[in-house]
Amino acid sequence: MNSSFKEEQNKKTEAIEQLLTKYLPKEEGFAGKVAAAMNYSILAGGKRLRPMLMAETYRLFGGVSGQIEPFMAAIEMIHTYSLVHDDLPAMDNDEYRRGRKTTHVVYGEAMAILAGDGLLNYAFETALRAFDTEAADPARIARALSILAGKAGIYGMIGGQTADMEAENLGSRATEEQLLFIHAHKTAALIEAAMMIGAVLGGADEKQTALIEQAAYEIGIAFQIQDDILDVTSSLAVLGKPVGSDEKNSKATYVTLMGMDAAQTRQKELSAHAIALLESLDGDYALRNDFLLELVRSLITRIK
Image (tube, rainbow, N blue to C red; front, top):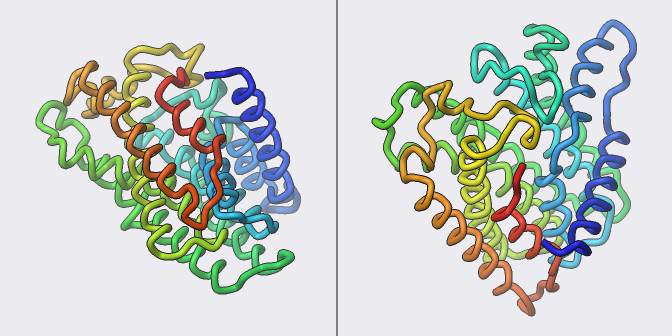
């Protein structure tokens, strides 16, 4: 990964952090504690990959107005709520996330549940603010809201989490079909939402949006395979969360199902094909976005 890309990525991540603070709930009144738990969760740092992919796909299709910003905040709120609930004792029971104590450890289990619920609902309150932005396109915003709702719901991320819980303790009896369903919905769906919303708000047509959805699916699966690899090869200090939790929870992963070498090969193949799909848009009413291509490439070699 070249240093200029890393510098640009850091600048974009910092800009997203500042953007998020604009949309956070106020920690006041009788609901102040749940707002504090929500803010603790969302300000824990992280790659901010989903809002970054959304913004860069928006740029790919020539988007320049501020209507993308509420959606960038919303997608990160939805992603964060899923992590808060994932970490709960009833699910993965993790004590660390992004290098610090998880929300349920700091605020208690009940407040963590409410914080996750709050982030999900507040995400849609936030996304709806796109209608009030300058140069807002109501039809595109409505389509973007539909994508966000669908990819986050029972036919998207929640469906994937459900299948993941159902598949626990299957170990080697889990099938590749089950694993693909879980990660296509639990992980890839929000990445698809991010990039499709960027495309739709940027003015992409249906064919282009479908191509973006396919590329985002492949990016999502490649991202999850790398997560599975890092859960075996990394450390708490580097990753910011416990390693070996998949084994602890008897979860089937691409590594347990395919072996390390095959998982690494598959991850590289998916990433390369996703990049080829994005490059095929160049000149097809889309602008070349070298940063977006490099961002996808960086998923292959990330260490956390």
